[in-house]
Amino acid sequence: MKPVLSPTAEDPEWRIRGMESRDQGRVFEIERGCFPSAWTHTVLAQVIATPHMRTFVVEEGEVVQGFVIVGTEAGVVHIWNLAVAQEARRRGLGTALLSRVLHLARLERFKTVALSVREGNLGAQLAYRRAGFRAINIRHLGYGDEDAYEMRLDLDPGGASASASA
Ligand SMILES: CC(C)(COP(=O)(O)OP(=O)(O)OC[C@H]1O[C@@H](n2cnc3c(N)ncnc32)[C@H](O)[C@@H]1OP(=O)(O)O)[C@@H](O)C(=O)NCCC(=O)NCCS
Image (cartoon, rainbow, N blue to C red; front, side, top):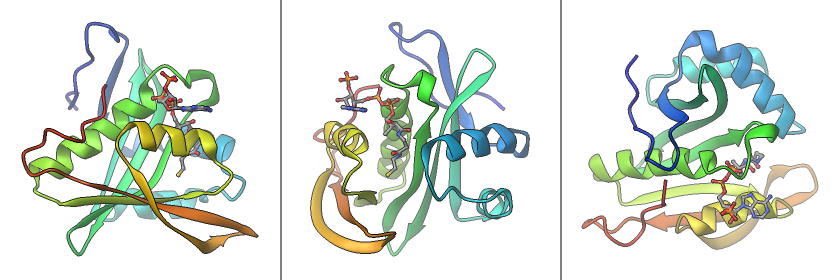
């Protein structure tokens, strides 16, 4: 599959493409390394196969280093899962995946992108905040005892105000 977002001159090593079934093992490995209650292989396979889910991976060379899974419902794009392998963090890959999602959301004229993130997950909150998301609510969403922030980005139809820098 062709890359769907080209790297910038400053980031010549990565590319983003649609997730394929061959990526499942690596995606599962990244997922397990990130989340205490990681999705199982079966759930992941179902998610990848669900038609209204959009799934992307970011590769450095031949190595998948991160992924994002989004769904759409009632005019809102929901980010269900975003993760970058521990060893590849803080190199802009998470931001690049977010940028891809925001780009698609704008192209397809969605007005809002939403997600929830554990209260204690400050790194992710900061990454989302930097991409333009703001916390709008805090709720118990089933992450054990921990609450979660609901974060949201309202997209400017002109596309100028909320772009993440990839
Ligand atoms: C959240 C996550 C996807 C970010 O990926 P990443 O590739 O490291 O993100 P980026 O390199 O694009 O970082 C963008 C900005 O976010 C902020 N940020 C990201 N991680 C951070 C951390 N651990 N501490 C503080 N700030 C952080 C910084 O402002 C960073 O910019 P900088 O590196 O120039 O300071 C990654 O940390 C991850 O996979 N975490 C585990 C899974 C997870 O929590 N996913 C989100 C579930 S809702």
